[in-house]
Image: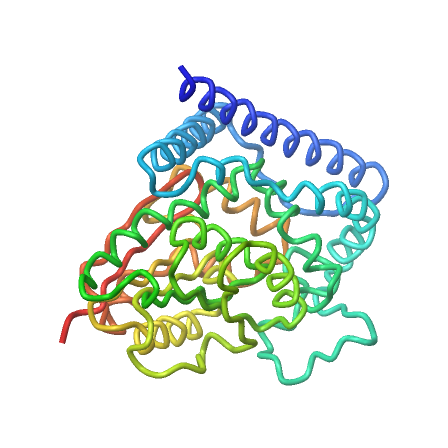
Amino acid sequence: MPDTLTKLTYQTFQQSKSIFGLAHKTLSTGLMKALSPVDKKVTPIPTELLLKLQKRLNDLLEADWEDAERGVYPKSLLFDNPWEDFFLYYPQIWIDLPQLWERAKSEKFQDFAPDIDTTDYPQYYVRNFHYQTDGYLSESSANLYDLGVEILFNGAADAMRRRILAPLKEGLKVFTDVTPRQQRVLDIACGTGRTLKMIRAALPQASLFGTDLSPTYLRKANQLLSEIPGELPQLLQANAEELPYLDDYFHATTCIFLFHELPAAIRQRVINEAFRVTKPGGTFIICDSVQMSDSPEVEPAMQNFHETFHEPFYMNYVVDNLVERLEKAGFENVEMQVHHMSKYLIARKPLM
């Protein structure tokens, strides 16, 4: 009975997040059309596709519950929500909207505050992805990011992130001679540390590492992760194209929601680096948007994402062959999974 009640509570919690996300987007879109209309070619989503997307969401939430029930991660993680950030920063999302609308209308996607130094960053990175204020280079952006992503995915972003935890733990079983404290896991482009927090819940003793290009997002990650009892993950500002670690150092590496924001050639370089720093026998897990090869039925949603947000590399991403790129780097036995609007590639580095 307690498990049934917990599951019902979880389903209610997720349904509430979904309704909230839909309500926010409906209201904000209506306001934009009334106050600052943008000439964007948006494809209406057919009812049949909406029903399919609802089923995909239901399947995702069922998988999330099942993993928690079988102990992949504690059930408390299902209810983890940054409530303090929500109440503090949700009003700021509304205050920030007119600036986003103006950038979308005028196609200003390299718009940064005067005090932000954009030198020494890759050119593809110095832009306002999603038309968000200051791109990834301000404290305000870091504070709003996780909340914005949850709204974007109608409350399903965390559930999609958690799909990496089962294959991550499974991959680490290869290292039978390594104690939990000796396991080293790297999250590439860790952002605000949301995924690292989930990995910590699933692997309470492992040594965790994170890299990101944004110093402000790393400060946010440090703030978030320092609230968790135990060893603090080691965070470094670094380009994923040149990771500052020795060869064969990590037992597993992960990368969440990065590849669709990279040019094609850079995707390959990041995969090559992940291969270099992963130990033989180790696992590399990518979580990102679905692609045409696995989800052609959601093409209208993909097109709308590209049209509505500033995502210049997305349409190339959705037709890119990531399995081929992983194998080119040297990975093998690449497994693919799809959960809701995210795709997962679980790749193994061959044993020597």
